[in-house]
Length: 143
Image (cartoon, rainbow, N blue to C red; front, side, top):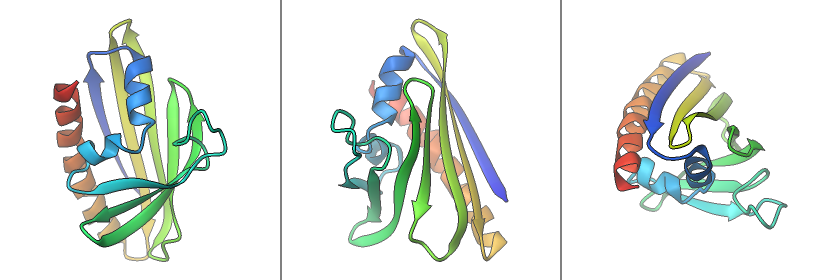
């Protein structure tokens, strides 16, 4: 199993950064030029990007993958998995939130990936780590 982890401190309360990262649209900024679009709402109408929601990730007209939110603990943790992709044997994305103070939050983003070709998982994860780091910096500056 291959894994990456990226941490970033945000100068905002945990409630605000959690709500930002709980929305699929936010990932358009983090993972640009990828486009994240919710294609299935969660059952909880008050949180359409919550548990059970599915987002389609694409670049231009090429649909790359689908991710499903599988767990959400408000202000603490979000978990998602890639679905319907025969190349991926296992995937788990976990975003954890830790309030460092009333105005500062540590976000820890962990991705585990197992594919039939282990070198592909390592390559994909190394690229994702770079994109996540720069995306978090862009997000922090834009807020």
